[in-house]
Image (cartoon, rainbow, N blue to C red; front, top):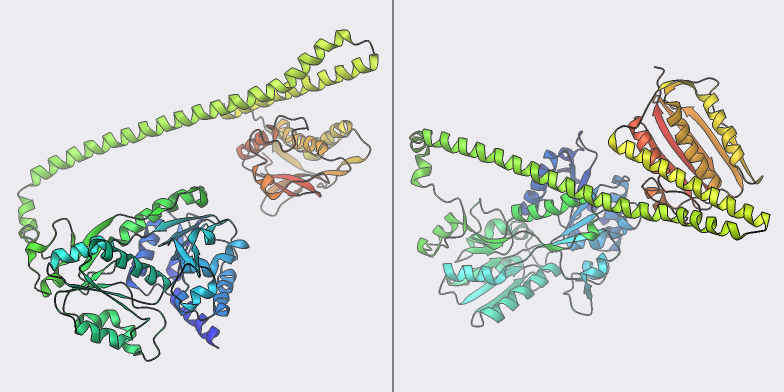
Amino acid sequence: MRIISFLVLFLIIEGTLSPVSARGESSNKEVLVLNSINFNLPWAKHFYWYVHDVLQEKGISAKAESLSVPALANEMEANAVVDHLRRKYPVPPTAVVLIGDPGWIVCHELFDDVWKDVPVIITNARDRLPASLDVLLSHAPLTEANSVPGEEWRRGYNITILKQHYYAKETIDLIYQLIPDMERLAFISDDRYISEETRGDVREAVEKNFPDLKLDLLSTTHLSTEMLLDTLRSYKPNTGIIYYSWFESHNENDNNYLFDHIQEIITNFIPSPLFLLSPEDLSNNTYAGGYYVSTESFCDALLETLEHVLKGEQARNIPGRVGGEGKAYLCYPVLKSYNIPSFRYPKDAVYINEPKTFFQQYRVEILSGFIILFILVAAITYYIRILRKAYSRLHEAMEKAEQANQLKSAFLANMSHEIRTPLNAIVGFSNMLPEIEDRAEMREYADIIETNTDLLLQLINDILDLSKIEAGTFDFCPSLIDVNQTLTEIEQSMQLRLKSNAVTFTFTERLPECVFYIDKNRLMQLLSNFAINAIKFTQAGSICMGYRMEDNGMIYFYVSDTGCGMSHEQCAHVFERFVKYNPFIQGTGLGLSICHTIVERLGGEIGVDSEEGKGSTFWFTLPYRKE
């Protein structure tokens, strides 16, 4: 019953964000944001919508799910969360952003099956984590015995991290600047392990930098909400108070109303301003502020990492880092309400709800007297923009030139190796021929020379085709052809290439009649390449060639064999240049790459379905045309 209730709550929370996060029409990329707690917290809601709006402008869909990990009581409830995500997202998202390590501890098994290798960015990551899910759910304080380095949880997955640094020393310095006679510091936090880690950071900062400052660590571990408020009310005005969080399971005798509304009523019980270590909404005049990384700054760092991931870079190859830059943020009305004189206010801080200056009040009147100056500035700005665009284009051109130079170097390195191999065989065996008297051995050497000559000729032809493709001068001369007759010619040619009766080559699937407007030579080149590869890698069994008409108006051509097959990873790279998975079988490694380019130029799609030990099916589709 508890699990059912939890799932209902889970669906209600995430449902408030999902409808407006539908997949955009301009992109099939989707980013899923999983929050270890929920999006009811103001900073979490601000975090999500900031990321959502930026991605939406780029045509990328963003969705959100609340995991509510602190509310999970046992492993069964955690498994219910994982099962819900598995059912809701059978198609993995393009990337996953996890707010907090607890969500990863609960959901990591998803990335062992249905979401395998989906890139993950964990924000607010910590160095040490609970050693198991049970330790996390128990809310026990972390020790060396029940915790492990965070890397232990992340090893083997496609993950990078974005840490959130807490500026404890800088925040205390800021409080001292505003309350110079501070004698005591109270730090309010809950019983989550993250809060325990943060309490350790604050304790260390005080002991190291402020040894004379008395520190009170107020947490849900030892205090009910009523006891917290009574304690705060007893403090003197020269007490500094830092609020971190008051979340988690309630104490046994806690007042539910006070617990749920602590952020709204806490200011009624404190004699001095309430400071922060992490971003909150300062616009409602509740918090005085603090020294921390703003949500916008942190999200900008996240979006920078996310951009690399969405462009195809593996998350595991992106070094983890600290997100954003710390700065002092202060709420002006709150400071004034506690009668803190303005000369103590730091000049380099960002102030929220600061009263308008004389210029802000009379901005229209002042600006009307500087219209001419404004026009001049606008003209200069426009000129600078033109220069920046020119510089940007120059920079792009330089990058393209550098990339072309690197590609040229890689091409020459590959070609020098591929040409040298058959050439060495031709020269070596040609030098040995005059010394051979046995006719059979001489014939064998001559066959080797002929084979390597053909291989070298094929390599040169492939290079020429590749050069024409890159230059855009590859010839396409379409005409009406009889597809059945063309494939019959290929069948007869390939049967002559078979070196063993253990392999058969047949033209099986066909239409009764099919006239197709296409370049006959390119169609034969495509199917011949597939067929020759099938003959090379099939020692026994059958090779079948055929075609059929698809419902979407495309013609599907294929060559299927019962050869050695390929792994899934090999299939992903088989159409790249110079890819050869068996160095003992002759070939240039360019044929399939050329096929891929030809099919793309003809407006089709190419692919392979293969299973190791059972064979492969190479296929391509082309739009059907009669003229």
